[in-house]
Structure formats: structure tokens, C-alpha cells
Amino acid sequence: MQANPPTRTQADEYLEHYRTTLASISGVVSTPNRVVSIILSDCVARASEAGIKPTLEIYLGKNFSINAVDLTVLLGNTIENALRALSEVPEDNGRSLHIMLRQRENFLIYEISNKYVPRAKVPARRGYGLRNVRECVKKYHGELKFSENGEVYTVTAILQISG
Image 1 (cartoon, one colour):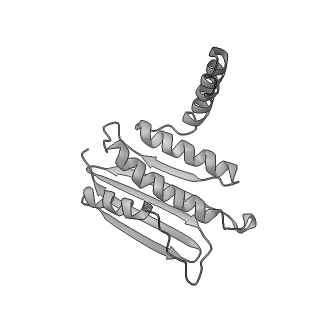
Image 2 (cartoon, helix red, strand yellow):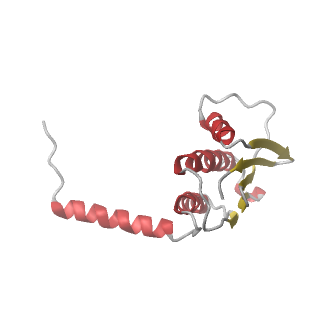
Image 3 (tube, rainbow, N blue to C red):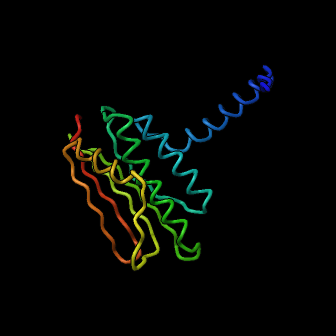
């Protein structure tokens, strides 16, 4: 049995809902790079839904240039991991998320830090997220560092980019 195609009215309603959603997301964070703006806007929206107010430090020049897919891999995977870790932190324990993205000449410095619940041994996940992040950083002849300080986990990446 074949499903009935949506009517013009249903399609119009869907498009209007989609436009409204995009407008509300895209208005949250504005940077010189559209992809960065969209990813960070989504992060802020998702964090807000979880009762977290992230702090952002974004310093990008108008000539900032990095492949959109690579930006999505780097920012998307690390933000996803941070939000997942924050979901395990009790609300009364000061959930925090800080993102810094800074362009300095031909370098991009990215740092994301978040509160998390330390565990004795965390089982390995089968995802490809951090593996893809490592490959992305390697592609830009960069450096990737993970650190823990008490209950704060930090990922720092430095990439060589064209400025």
C-alpha cells in the first residue's frame, strides 16, 4: 500500500516550521564563519535544554578558512562528547561547559572543557568520533591534547590553517 503524498498545505506548514526552527537556532551565535555559527548555535540550544549555560570565546577573522566537514568533525564530535559527559553530572554540582575558538595568524586553537563525573575505569566506546577528530587534527599538521583537572575534562587542538 502506497502512502499518500503530503498536501501542499502540509508541505507549507512543514517548511514554515523548518524556517522558524532555523531562524531561532541561527540567531543564537554569530561568527564570521557560517558553519561555526550553526554548530555553536546548536550547542547552545542543546545545552540550554539541559539547564547548562555554556561560555563561548570566539575570535575568528573574516578570512578564516577551514573545510566545513573538518569543522563539523572537530567541533561536532567534541561538543557531543562534552554534552554527553555533562548529562551525567548532577544539576546541583555546577555543570559547566566552556568553548574557546581562536584564530592566530595561520593557527586555529580550539579548546573545550566541561565538568564530568570521574570514574575508575570507563568502558571503551565503539564510536569513531575521537578517531575522526584525531585524523582531522593530523590532516592540519596539528596537535591534540586531552587533560583532566579534578572534575573538569579538557580537549585542546591546535591546527595549522590558511589565514
